[in-house]
Image 1 (cartoon, rainbow, N blue to C red):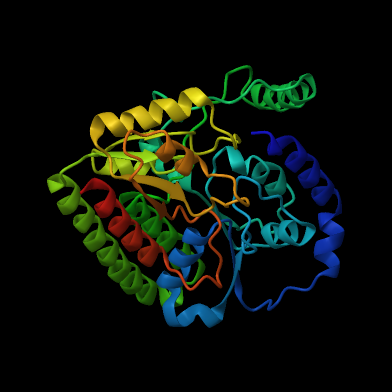
Image 2 (spheres, helix red, strand yellow):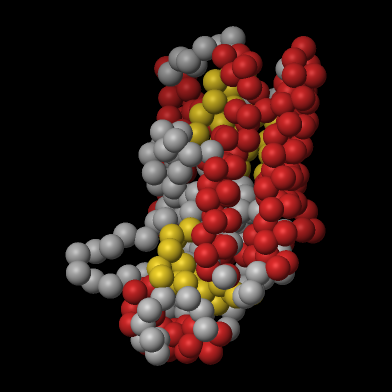
Length: 344
């Protein structure tokens, strides 16, 4: 991804100064257990497990200003938070390439680290390009040079082996969420053995709620009149789609840096809508309407036979903040309602 080169430079600068920064920046409360999460779903899972014991913890959400993880760059304060954390939770995909360097300066030898992709293990899915999907454009010589440097670093770390890129949108699966909650529970019970039974009860209750919603997805998708979703946008929902044996077509992959779809991509998706009699085109919550310019979803609609499809927004939680009045469960329930409209 193109932002990684700049991000690596920022991380290196932060690491050079992080010991000084940490030394002159007091902890919000040294008696509290420090937990740092990179994205909102992690933060929400933690707070649900902790429940009424939240006063014993200092919980930080790094992407709490509305920046999604694909463009997030850690600040000096972020690096200081991470290096002093008792528990650090991150996704572990390509967007988190900066983490390895950040953790080198950790001042807490007992820090527990949860890498969501590592937790999934063999269940993690490799990135894929679906038929009709826009591929990355050819880069300029300067961009290629920068990305070659990044690739060279990855290759050297892997002793010449090519690094496999996995789909990092692992939180968009209720089945995965149940696995992650269990991993977080295990870490929390080690950090606070005194209240372990409280955390276990909270986690069990929360997993039951996840399981209930998971079953609602399963019941609906198994009886829906259609089984294909069309995304006039990026597509970060592969884990969810495959959980329920659905199919999809999209303009871009989930981590694509592209902002303009080619004529071929627009035409392919419009024809697929005509062929399958699709009545809904999906776009992400991150889609921003720029003046009178049509969004990709709108452009696809205008190239269909009847031009009468609904354009609905589905939430990937890539820029959700603590002030959004959303929860992981509420977003996933809302997404089910959107999918119901799209598949009926």
